[in-house]
Length: 313
Image (cartoon, rainbow, N blue to C red):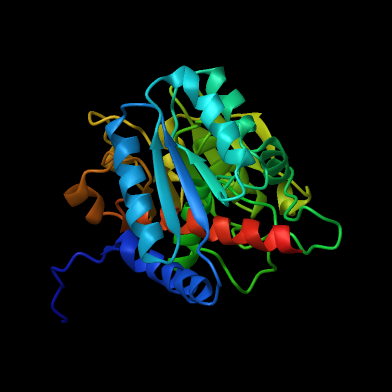
């Protein structure tokens, strides 16, 4: 009779390990350039998480061969003017605005103020529309890739790294057969992420404080893009049937109920707060990624290079 192992099978994967591949690729590309690309960060709020993100972005950008400039805007009402200054400056290659600023529809307006040619976050209406409609290029010749929002794209890259995407399936269908629960439906991350994963073939339960929605491409992926329907299941029912659970609740008090996690599920948290109990989740999940910030920054800088490529086509 073989002895039972006491080891916990869960693998905790740090974001730095996942980001390394992309940061090395980025550094190799910037080393070949005759001048540094300039990324401008605009910070008009006192959110500690935004300040930390801005600091990480600056350190990473500078270390990888970019020129990062942070502009702290003293009054929120002056932010729009600063965006247009950066748009008009020939010395600025990319712009990131640290949201939330006003925390309402005015933020959505400000997102559209950023030039589509300098929008490293992929929040311009054209990029967002392409993403929801599962259109991956800006032109009919398929030479210019559409820009995707950084954090949702980072989650996709995390899932690819973990082997969740099935590379034996056709590109665009590689999450077919996977079920995902996402606890966050913000316009910046949660909803775009649900759309991206559903467009890649997954059945996605998108949960927020009010309800749960289902994002999917229909039986046998018969639809080209995802459709959204109301869900009558509880969060517990959704989660217990999910291969992947992704959280993004910006609250220190929130913890995803460990008892809802299916044994062997993949758990990923993109919030700046820890949404899982570290010790408890390791007893049930197969893989756990506690934070993804470094992957998000890598995707932002990758987008900056993509914008340059698109302009040169």
